[in-house]
View 1 (tube, protein in one colour):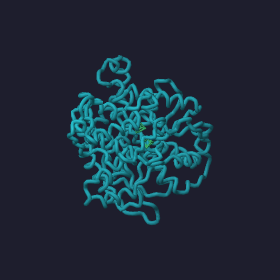
View 2 (cartoon, helix red, strand yellow):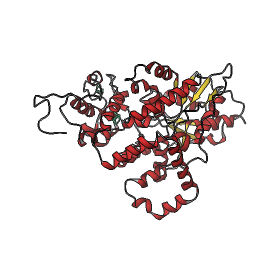
View 3 (cartoon, rainbow, N blue to C red):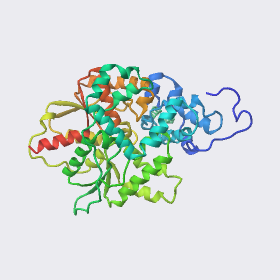
View 4 (cartoon, helix red, strand yellow):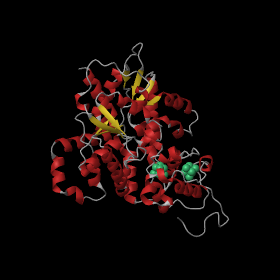
Length: 444
Ligand code: SF4
Ligand code: SF4
């Protein structure tokens, strides 16, 4: 970090405004128990790439002893915000909240690679907040994939020559479902006697994983729920929050809060781990809007992850044999970090998978480690992401599983790409698809 005279050393302390609070910073007792849980520390062995080292740097910035410069940016940006350190920490350090506050500080500073800054501005200020633009981009991608253009471009070797990691980006893009998942035109009347569930359509989930969303709705209905997909919702803002862009994140979050509360719901279900964790923590995003906080807290109390909610309900009665597709299949559940570490949900999806006839579930040796996807991390840090992914693929290979089940679009895209490149013969599916197939199979 910055060498030479610091503001404090020169007798001119200028504690920085914003960033993690003094209270959160003070929770870290520097014990180091989080180090081995951290994928970037495991990969580099460097203190500066560990949770403890990053907290030291946050503290130094907070106290005005260092500048927010390129070096600071590098160490903070290499963090996956996987929050494995939170699970490992005995002192309750809220690392995710601290890192998001730090990235908020970094957002408007001219630090980091200029190309990355431009890409971030385009992505988080123009694409995610504008649903129509987002949908048009995906519509163009669908034409590219389904017209045969994709295979021509891939065979041509053009992608390998493209600058700025575009080849990597193209490889990550899943084969898009033939149709997007759409919100309802109007809020339907309440059905008596059944849970009324508001479902988050999502941005990536509704456009790239339309079939998963339709499967999720069918499963919720099979569990006896009325599913409402209220109009007016868009992207929940999770990726913006993780990147440190809060202004538009708040606008997107408010649209989701209002559309859901308008619909008179018993519960709000989300089947994307990263979205769910952000939605459960919206009150941190709106901490500076005390007048709006009661509404946000009312919303937060209703939010449940898909597996978390289903595990509270009795599994639907079976009337026939299990799904033929699942017979004799060895499956492993890959925890999304924002479920396992941020929401502390690990048992519920495993319990649900145990109910699927013919599915034999096994565990990974390191289930608590990230797969290296982490939002757009795999595009911004391809080398580190690949190293972390390779460790995950080794773990999957050793498990003997042929089916990997997860609950986050980023993890699914990352593992599919890794498996394809490593020629690992596995299927990677969302838990909603597996349950939907099992329930259909049980219909006989
Ligand atoms: S974050 Fe927690 S586990 Fe890590 S050094 Fe600080 S107190 Fe120890
Ligand atoms: S969030 Fe993940 S990558 Fe970042 S410091 Fe914690 S364990 Fe390491």
